[in-house]
Image (cartoon, rainbow, N blue to C red; front, side, top):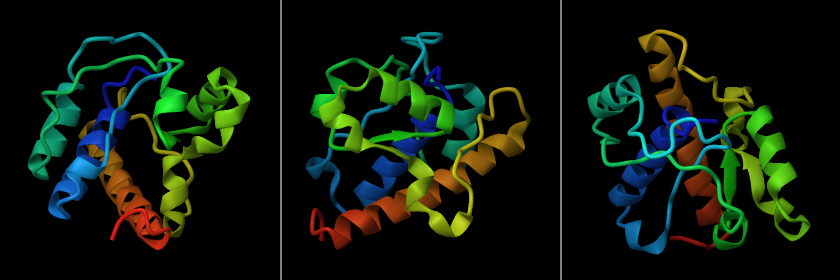
Length: 151
């Protein structure tokens, strides 16, 4: 929603996975919120600390709101929960609806569809977000490999 917890964490984790596979030049990864609560802000300090503890740096990221042209520019628009998925679907032109998915669709073994918002919880919530986005990132990379998009 505000682009300071889940989405920047996912962006950082996915970029770290791409770096491990020497694929950073092949992708443009960006996160955005459906609301303008924190535009221009760095990720939540708790998200930064939890990510840094796993070797992922988030401090360079800045919150932004989804732009109308994002639907045309990006091949995949991945939402963290059903509420944000619904907002994205409402904003998205019909010809790009197929691009919108829940991020955890790529981690079906988790049997969980949504990444919970850790903002109002304790440190464990940020660790849980990292666990979930790591699993989804792995699954998304496998999907892209199976489709021949990456090796």
